[in-house]
Length: 330
Image (cartoon, rainbow, N blue to C red; front, side, top):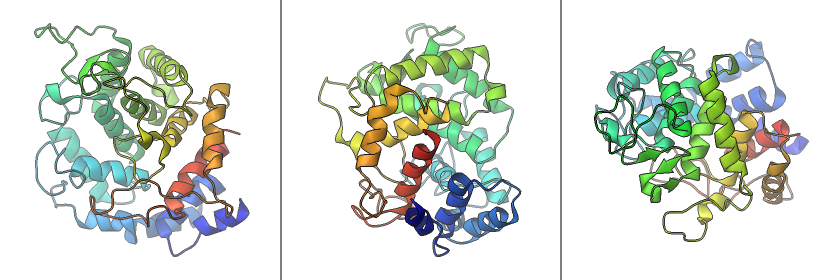
């Protein structure tokens, strides 16, 4: 692994180098070397490129709730910045964008929306946005209500069916029931959405996890680990075979999900040693080449602000993802 780590620490890629120093080498936040690397990652490379496209008010492309256009708007830009290690304390523009999203997108009950109305709430968006905001350093008090909403939709506590339009809290067409039920998945539990929700719970500090959130975490873990994550044999809309996207590791990761991200979510919640992850961890190791690197199997080339390498070639961003979970699962 030493040669692989040296590759990730190459100064020519300041964004990868910063995250490798932080997550693999384990330098503390106040270490001068890490602070310098963090600053450089925000002034050179993909973080700087994305922020250069931001409008002064805090959005990308066009104002509003910011779900479209994919994958250039504020929703996708913030998701990507979070995966790149962006920090609101390092660059004020990130804090401005986080506040803009909360002001323009967040609904009164705490949900994010892909349509601009409460009916556009869906697990993958809710989880992605909460994880992104917390990871970026946003500590807005509105996030507390948003996390409680998300936990409640997992367990079903206090939630009325979609048909009860006048209920104080209810499900909607997409976010249609407990246990990650999703209208886009034929009202069946959606594992893609579950992974995003669990990633968001992992980003939320443990001391801020209420009993409701803890129950939702346990319920989510039982769902994702109830099937072998290495097979990703989760419910599909039509009962068709498992999507091959589960087995193509990529960067960045938006609402499509892979097995590696299941493990990321579980490791982030303290399940790294759970024996039910053994096959998934072995799958991750099996995709490593003889140089200790992982390839970019899935990408968004031409579909977003930044590209992250050639497809099917060894990729530092994917390698960073894999090495992080393997380190935390030992």
